[in-house]
Image (cartoon, rainbow, N blue to C red):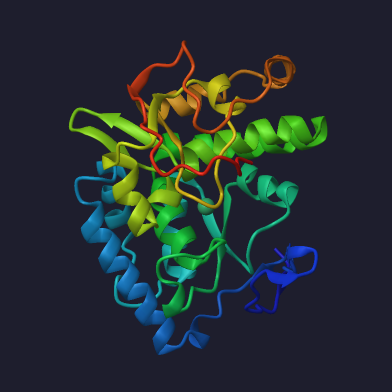
Length: 297
Ligand SMILES: [Fe+2]
């Protein structure tokens, strides 16, 4: 693919809000330009999350992370991870400057290319960053791309995204919620109890603990249309987490054509992030403590 020079660019705050100024091109990971501080941030976050995730993250996530051979000591080189990933599931990592426009992102996923932001947060941003960086993308997303069923789900999601993009903004919103509540913030029911597989959680110290232990959020069984109707939080921990029973459930959910589903969902309307419905399979009904009253997107 065409490559361009990598620039380290974060969203710029202007009078129009945060404006994305990224290139959509693929960039080569400028590995030799990482500073000792960058490597130390990786090392610190990696060690902290690995310790925290024992007994919290899904065993498959932890197993695949080991299988990938990511170095805890230095920022891994995409070129060294790619042969392992390609052999496991046919996926590959590509370097990007940051968040991509939706259609570009979907096209990469549909073709089994996972975009990874090449730059890592600063030491001042260890606990919170408003957009994905290398740690979130690589530590959080990439291990499960080694799992064949999850890898197929991600590619199916990309194909679904290309279609939804052509249908219109409401369909796209429905599909984005699916990604949010599975790939980013999903929980999985295992014989040992609920475990985390969502990348947004595994890469967050606070939410790794909150999502499983705290009494405030709902934990509700996954249902495709329910999830696609549910609004979410981008500025606080989630009010609701959806629980799958296995990665097959995710892949099966993307099997049907979503076109009639989008039409049904448009009729049904959206559900606020914290609402529990009568039809829900409830693992835990949240107390709602500490919830913001507005701000669902
Ligand atoms: Fe993400």
